[in-house]
Image (cartoon, rainbow, N blue to C red; front, side):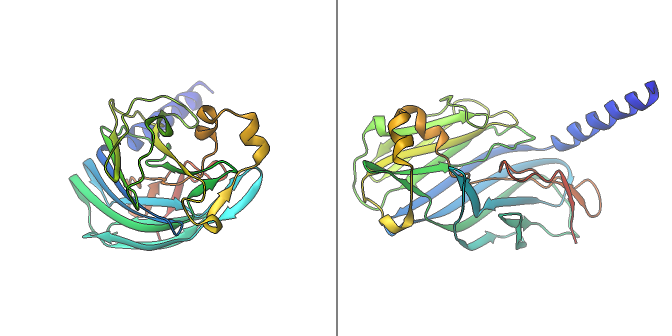
Length: 271
């Protein structure tokens, strides 16, 4: 029994060490908003692999739940520069497998990913809102720097109090990051390293009907009345922008994580 306990501890420690043998040096997201109710996203993710890996998997959820209901959103126009990639559906996610199964990589790698998302907007009787989880939260490695910029469709001046940025664990409201508007661009960056399990989310309050109403998800008016807006934003989340790293220790095995609470796959095969 004692030996079994020791073997179990060593196995867990081995998995933990293996899962964290890479570092995200930087994560930059460029997002363009369109009044028709969709966004385009370009992510440049720099990863440092001190040991041989094949690449990463980027999971973007297109199925999510809000107020007990199930919704779907369209993810399209997916592309990855330089690296080979393959897109598949996996338990409510568009899963982008990036890398060549026959090529091992070491050192710093830059992954340049673009895609289009339909309807990542919320609406209430008083306002509309763009809410975006930039990084996701299911990290097994630190993110040294996160930066973002949002290109608005026109010259709308958003009040500073209507800009929000949150860092930390899922649901946390820490603000270890900046956010500000300069012309049509709203941008910001982290002021400290995001530790494993932490992420960055932004929220922009917009005028009512600023985006096409049919492309927004209406919030329950009773929820809007019951929860102050400063507290409501972190919890009214569409779980988007989720990143899962595929740390390939063996020929066909890898570990992937996702922040979606209705799905978790610790290990899956590459066929």
